[in-house]
Amino acid sequence: MENDDKSSRIRGFYDLPLKKRHQLLIERGFLSPQELENLCSEGNLPLEIAENMIENVIGTFSFPLGIGLNFRVNGRDVLVPMVVEEPSVVAGASFMAKLAREGGGFTAHADDPVMIGQLQVLDVKDLQAAEESILNQKEQLLGSLVDVDPVLRDLGGGPKGLETRQIPHSAIGPFLVIHLLFDVRDAMGANAVNTACEKLAPHLEEITGGRVHLRILSNLADRRLASAACTIPLESLAFGEYTGEQVRDGIIEAWAFADADPYRAATHNKGIMNGVDAVLLATANDWRAVEAGAHAYAARYGFYRSLSTWSRDQAGNLRGKLELPLAVGLVGGATRVHPGAKAALKLMGVESAQELTEIIVSVGLAQNLAALRALATDGIQKGHMRLHARQVAIAAGAEGEQINQLADQLILDKQVRIDHAKEILNSWK
Ligand code: MEV
Image (cartoon, rainbow, N blue to C red; front, top):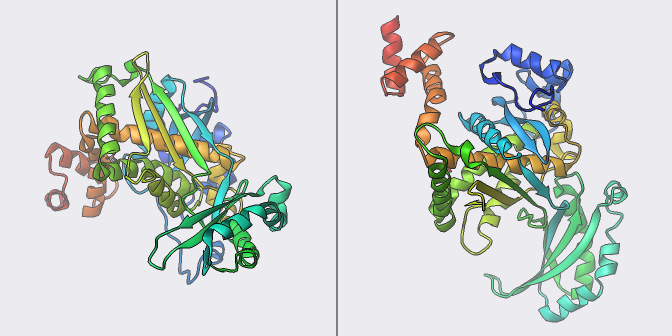
């Protein structure tokens, strides 16, 4: 398997020149030359497409696109496109995916793609009675929405449930909230759900005698959870002077900090989102929606906590789990029109939103492990330094071969700062 052409374990990829990396992706059949061009060319979003995506377009804006290596998700190898501006993210995820692979890779699961649409019903005299009337007519109400999106209907999506909630205390007094549960199949779902909510509103007004105010999707997509788990064999954790036990226990201690303290949990979860967002960006998905949902979910017990858990299994190995709401789409939205996003999906070989979700949640878990392993051992700066030093060198004006030379010098001097970089550059003139 490790020698398989489609293996995600590509030794030496990091050291290959960029052109050779491209060649390898074509030779191994991950992408056709045209798909590679769509994915990787500078400015891979044609202006005429960009102009139709948002308003007041004056251009496009590029970020680095890297490949997360070594990922095996539910027994399948996958190369993961990651768009991110921060050094060490892609390297960290790839390295941790390698450790996870030694324990069989990631096991991931995505719920059915059921989103929640919210309707705020105001001016209702008797909330209890209104709730009962709605629930009594639930089937008819859901039935009225079956044909809202014929494509979704034919794919098995559409309205799946209706729930009522009372908000007893608010700045404007008590009111009713109706949740429409809507299966959006391979879409992120905002458009389908918002349309369905707007269609449902007059029926609810009729039944309750109230006034429907807001009609909008909720980003706390907790009916659309994704989870990933991995086991890192104890022996794979040992490195340098650290034993496997030390690294494992250090990671569990670091996780416990995040699980108990919101100040730490925010940073811990940000590390998870480094990986999640990078794949969302590469596939032109709505990362703000996922961010909002993830953080709201992290606070679901009324206390902001870690989205992941780390523990030791019976054999003493490290076991990690991550769960978060993940609303992603393959159809509709920008993913459908962005040539790079389309090629990114091809690279991963995903054919459903659920498959994409399972990869993304696995990358989040790998990214979390990378941060915890570094923090629990050498500290985060050591790994960051090399790429950071290169960025400082470039910012100071280094070009070509000078970049690596200057970065090495900054690290050697233990002064990775722009003023020092400029000083050295000047001394080289
Ligand atoms: C930096 O982008 C992410 C980390 O701060 C995450 C963490 O502290 O767990 C390293």
